[in-house]
Image (cartoon, rainbow, N blue to C red):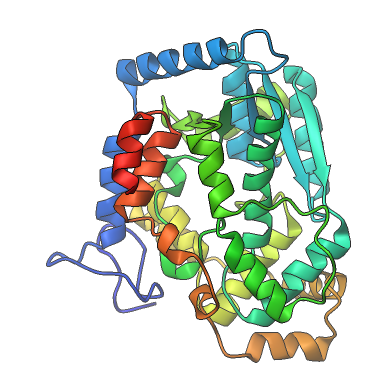
Length: 384
């Protein structure tokens, strides 16, 4: 175990940018508690705030087949977000990105949920050659956040679908109860299309990206400032206890839980539980458990007990490594070279990082405007 561990969470110096105060409390815990206090709304206040936003969504969608779009992956957070949306009387269009890595359980969960909730589904299938070429390029670039390839496509797809259908609102399953902590050094902002293009130009095989959804920084600004697309993180309004919610979804919606977080994708499991910890020393369970500690859903002792459990059983790791690398077209020798190659940050290649600093005044303004908390005039003032 690292010698420098936060006294309130299980975050440690596997994050090279972690900072501790005089009591050994990390910057991650302090920031998480601040965000939970400012951005999560519980009790009567949460009910009233959500009611007001839902009324706006319904008004903006009046006369249209759908009043909001929402991404569905088969994961617990997006699943429960869909349940809440229907209970609130919203008319969502579910949007799913098929990147060729869905698990059978994820497909089952999506089908069961949407059938029982009577929600229409739009699925965008990305040509497998494109996904494979992009993911291979990111592995060859030796950067940590290979999942940027999928995360960017999902985000771009939601904005594009909303705009093309005249829908102003997007519902997300992102939430601070379980996701308030994630070190910036462990990854890179998935919205930066320039980063994706530059890495692909250097390490890709030249496969044309015709079906891969992509949006530049200017396009995201256009959607938010001109099209005025808004985002509702619905799980931040009201109680969201992950364990209790999982039980409810199993009983009422036939939801099949995954053994681990993000088990809806075999690639994501491989990425988080083999590639990141083996090559970079990043165990994302630490961030996830620390988020739950900060929100009171897990104790520090419980988190340490979970961390003492192996990420993989030996035979499972061997099977997954062989399956994923073979599917991506890496020979055993090539993959060994990937794992031994010098590690790089995304910013070692050209990026638009200055636009995506999460702590900048600019990004805070965009985040608040995207949630409808401030108007366009104030947002422009904060941006420039």
